[in-house]
Amino acid sequence: MKTTTTQIPLVPLASLLLMAAPIAAQETSPPNRADSAPAAAQTADSDAEARAAARREQFRRLRYGNLAEIELAGKQLRISYPDLLTDSDDYGAFEALAAGEVASWTSGRAVKLLSHASLSFDGIVVPYGNVSPDYPGVYSLWPKRTADGWSLVFNGDADIWGSQRDATADGVEVPLEHSTADQPSEKLVIEFLEVEPGAVLRIAWGEHQFLAAFEAAD
Image 1 (cartoon, rainbow, N blue to C red):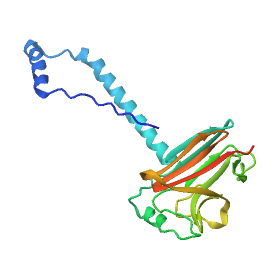
Image 2: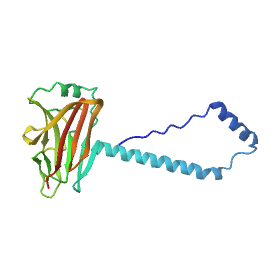
Image 3: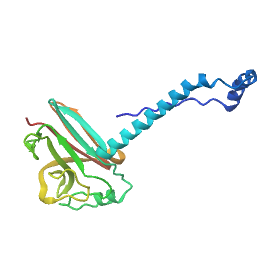
């Protein structure tokens, strides 16, 4: 999502003083407080709405972190992931992974997938309903360095901290296509790219970029 910042032109202080001077000279009595009350009330309402919106956003970030979302074959997919900076010990440990080791991090919750469909990664299926037949698929996601590249591990424990992965809960493992990113990212970025007939999962962190194509399996 692109964030647009609108810059408001600054008015020179001298111009403000010139504009205010005639008004001040014409004032012969205190301002009518009854007339100013509605404006003050509107400002208070606006401030209250802004504070409420900020609280909702803070709660959303505490609950989900960053979000990547897509609709695939009419089914919703959502990945929530924490702010993991490249200027951190977590990133250093990630780059130092040896073959067979799985990433972990101490400064955030585990990356979490919620999927209303089973997903097929070139025939490797991540099943819907791994917790309950009538409940979406829920997994934590873990990059793993392999002998010849990288893969992504889907773990059945979803609501855990990034250092609490239990290897016995590991389920499906799918290959990741690794490359060097054109523009290194300062923090972890996860997103879905729409590519017919399915989508591509993109993970970028520092100079690393990982891609995995998939489609709905049911």
